[in-house]
Length: 637
Image (cartoon, rainbow, N blue to C red; front, side, top):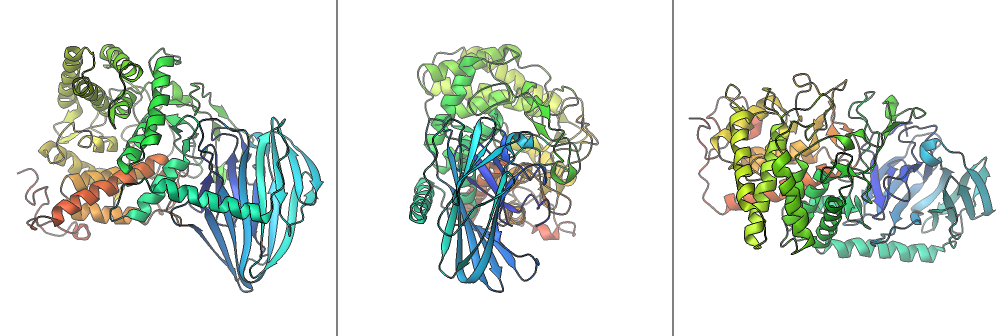
């Protein structure tokens, strides 16, 4: 493997409190423990020399004659890396035992099982942890030939092997070489623990096999709650598992992605830390899980969100800030890790996220929707939390903010922020009436209607014939693809179809969608970025709801080709089709699910009625043909 494998060349394993990335070459090159947002133990993905890694792979010193394939066991989070060499076929299975508990755990186990299914093959193991993002030294204490302890600051890492793998010290690291033949297997277990914790018992191969089956059974059982039975079952299941893996079980708080510092542009400065809970991302993730039938996850997040509102632990004194740590801590001080090279030299590498202090008023719309969706939000604490937020928002909504994309170029009156303010009041009014809850409905209604009129008057650009990014620009913004989804207007409204046409012309590149044009609307950062996968899937959903089914299905099929070999997506797609940004990203996978569900629903409706449209296949775009519209005629008369 190269010093830095492509971002997409990874699978993820996790235990619902932490997660690790495994490259297709057999390297664990990212693992933070004991929580998603803890300092790393392995981070060679951000610095090949200083970051640390654990490699378990078939040894191939010449680099020739061997191919590697990676896959998940169907409908599970068990990752298998297969090595097909001239002398045989071997594989490494990686998994973590799920800790689906409300109690945070200091101890986490990552299991790696080597096995040969044909022939005889040599394996190599190297374990080189580097604690605290590679800043802290460690000591090695070998207990015997099958057990070693790496002592770091506040955290110990145990490496233990089954019979067949003899561990050898290599300075303060550990290596091993062993050979397995047809039908033989051996395993190593990495256990992270608090420094004062008891020494874990060395596992037997039989115990590892039992754990493997328990892990596999957990995921199969969890997925049985999924109600989706559509055309894209496999990819939706994979996205659901990914969303679950990115949710911190003790609090129910989903994180945005498993990693930090992976670039939106190779060599650029757009390298952020995504291991936190964004109100927006989490609320949309929970809505998606509810739509799939996973109600326990939604209940846990709503409880976490309600606690954040009640605590009011924000620097500004506002009810919420845009993101938190998984335990609800609002302090996310951003620091530069100057000692790290960065992925392919992409610097600076940042830990923490200064955007936590930004004002983004859209979060109150997503929060309100999350608190209400799925049924009654409760008679006392749930309703009080929501009504307190809306009473506050009625006095504070009409302010410029940094917007959904967390720009660092100054506050604006972003149309999307106003749109989600409208959503907040609209959902609150609905809940007050539906569940007969006490509320100042008259005032909320007045504010909701004022916001609506403001968006229509200032967010619409007559010359562009489209809704635009903010009130003082003619720049388009893909976040507004959600306008029909949140029921602000009909997906077949002429003004919406005109907006969709404008986006199609300016933001869409062969089904891939840019968030906005940073050259036309400076965001305070140097460099560029790729197309945004979230927006690409929102585009598919908008096309489907607008009746442009051929175009929607073609765009969806194309987007699925950008998934990596195990069905995972990062944040963006680069100019050569490469995945960019933090990985895997929950935002992308929730949008994939909603796009699949919308497309399924609209395709089924279309199949149930006689075909009367004359939609063109998108491959004919640009050829002489009648203009496409929701009803098959001219979109604007």
